[in-house]
Length: 142
Image (cartoon, rainbow, N blue to C red; front, side, top):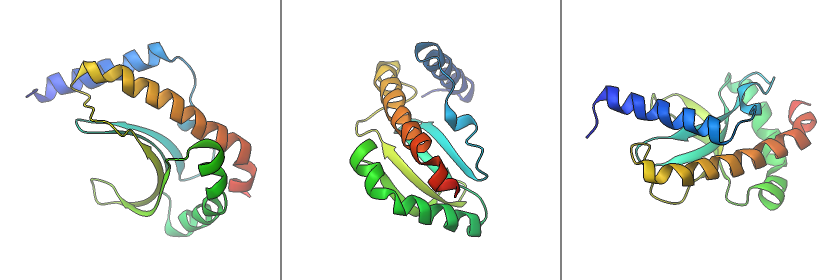
């Protein structure tokens, strides 16, 4: 087991290492669309990349409908393993809509032996998510 401080340090070390291994500016930091953001998630049990809709219900529905209309394109041309979840509950019980791709192997941010696999997974799948977003941003915004 790791103390909270040790866990915090490992998390910081992972993200710093990821940034150095794959240096680039990710679109996820600023999509310029209110309530729509890209996220990396890595904890003690899993890793995933996600497109989250976290705004008010009306805005979520608007974006969700547009993303649903693009679902076959996203799955066929970019991310065949993407999962669409209109009602996704975060750990804090907040409801959002999420499209995500999970890493299908056992990983832990506390196990440095799994870091390289997670970094490569993040880089590949977020790049594909961003390519989809760039190609269809006008449709999503519309």
